[in-house]
Length: 269
Image (cartoon, rainbow, N blue to C red):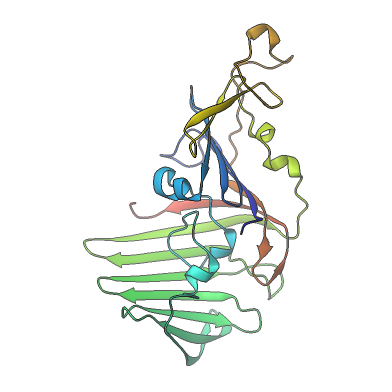
């Protein structure tokens, strides 16, 4: 993950209840985030700030179908209890929507249990459940299109039962390309379509590190007469949809990929 680069964008009007628009660029443990509201700064921060303060949904696409929540710090190893599982056993063979799968159980020393329904030889996880004191989680994945080894689900339904109430979420991948050639320019400040004079604040050191001049950051704000031709302090932002571009190793192989995903919350947060 240290060399991973991801770009997430929420376009205006596509996700009710969220900010009017937002773009997040992640390069390893460094994040650049910008919410498209008047007077907003570009925030520069680390993974701890992304999960503990901002609550960024800048997740690793490889965890789709392995968890009901998708925080920025969640890894595939976390989802598979790679470091925390104390006992692992094969329960037996099963079938899910016509796919032959193996049911595998993992147990932790705190009594929590996770079960996985894994297709072989693709190792796609069609279902995962987790149970412990006061909670039960059921994550079901559907796969469509592509080769049988295609690792990413097209639809994920996650249900959490916990006191005093439960929650259901559905994640839908509307478009996915792998491999895909993604320009390095997509991971730059210039690609974020920032208004001129937007301050960049580094929350790791708690200070302004520059002002956007249309090409890069400079020490002081841009004077109006020096604004680049055709630029104004306000930008026009798109209204299409939630999407992510990344240059990650796909689960099971090297692949640069791009996917467009929309999330519908069927329950409450």
